[in-house]
Image (cartoon, rainbow, N blue to C red; front, side, top):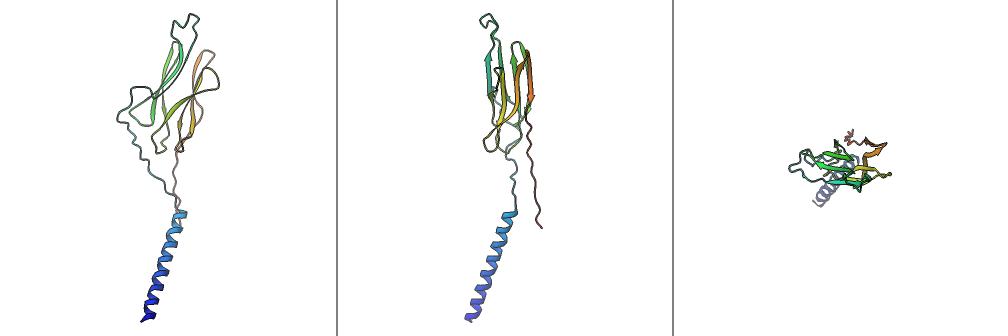
Length: 161
C-alpha cells in the first residue's frame, strides 16, 4: 500500500514539474504586445496651447508691430493629431501633425533649435525620451516647416512550432 502512495506522489510530482517546465518554456519564447489602451478620440481638447515657443522680432521701431517668431500647439478631437499655429512677423500658417501611438498619452513639446529662429517639435516615446519630429525655422525671410524624422509603431507575433 505504501508503494502505491509513493508511486502516486512520484507521478504527481513529475507531472507538475513537467507542466511547470513547459509553462516556463512558453514564457521565454512568447512575446506579448499589449493593445493600445489610449482612446483614439479626445473628449475635451484643451482650447489653450499645450506647448508654446516665442521669440520677439525687432522691427526697428521698438517692436511697435509686435512681430515674433512663434509656434503654438493645440489638441484636436483626435488624440494623436495636433494643430500647429506658426507666426513669423506677419506670416501666419496652420499645420497638422500626427504623433505615433505608443500606447500612452502623447506628450508633445517644443525645444529650441540650433539657430536663433529655429525650434523642434517633438514628443516623448514610451520610455520618456524626447523624439525630434518637426523643425520650424526661418531662412532667408521664409518660414519653413520640415519633418526631420519619421516614426512608426509595429507589432509582430512569432509562432512557435
